[in-house]
Image 1: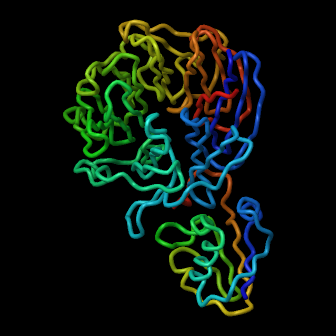
Image 2 (image 1 turned 30 degrees about the vertical axis):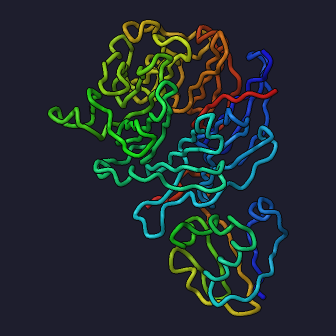
Image 3 (image 1 turned 45 degrees about the vertical axis):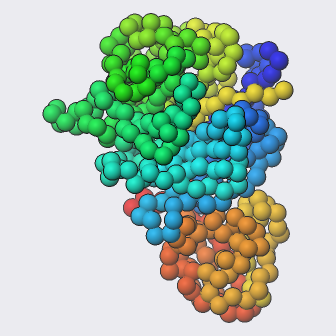
Length: 358
Length: 99
């Protein structure tokens, strides 16, 4: 490997970094922003800079930038807030998405209360994206236990102008015109928390996470109950959770090269791992069957993995990384077959992301 | 002049030594505006978009405790000290105190 892998670990009390050349031996760096909850930290692949959503309890949310892989951070840009008098307030940053390669200064950020911001100057200033909180379905959005958050953003690499966001509760939305108009794409996704005759609404789903697969128009989705696949860009969804010990969970991850392969981390009663065995489940046939991968993951655990606590790197074989709510960080360098502990006793882990360093 | 005492972590982040000396201002809100002009971005750390003092901060004036949306309207006089102090509410992860 020519580059080090750097894991960006957002926790309830700061951002931690772990660096490795071989994906087996890890060195801790940082931490940064100690005491501040972090839900999103990413590397901008265009510049190599790091971006972190810092949700300071005292001073409010900001998106900080580091141009030296975390050695120093700036104070963030301005105007990451709704207009004065708005009935909603920007409370936390939940997701950060760098724009396409041909727009090097374009960034997106999803926030709580659910809304989307855009920066055209690399994060110096932010503006709310129109047409989302004014969408006719917006009044049906509500707050899940984690907050009313826009937690997942993705650009479709196969279809220019197509972008997705998901919010809880609210559901999945798609634009095909670069963000000028948005449509809910939740047909077939079940709401277990609604009465029997109202379980398939247009919006209001508590989508926990979605992930774009390597094939055009294929997505995987973990709902608040139900694991789904779409082969038509979200226009329709197929329930693929039957082979799992529980179809409840938070993260879902599509393999970056194999469109039939995806990963979930089921949680059962009490939002704990089924049989208290922490396990990643993988399908290699687009959801027809699932296999538990747990070698090296602990048994008799009272923990979970949150929606952004599970990520892959870009290597072959695929590296996988998961962080738990009880502060353990695990890594697999062989597509999930075997796992090792990277760190224990961290704060509650909200997010894991992969960066690269020379 | 007005002497402003800010939390040490903010002073370190924005690169100044406590306390700050700022020109006299008729209200706390005017003082905060002046502070943000001097150190761009610092104002948004202390107040939300609608100008209210952030819920986990207390700003002490000689005769009053400034909080919320009414706090910035409090009057100031030349020569006074203003203390910005983090509230007794750390450790959680909610930007708003539990109601």
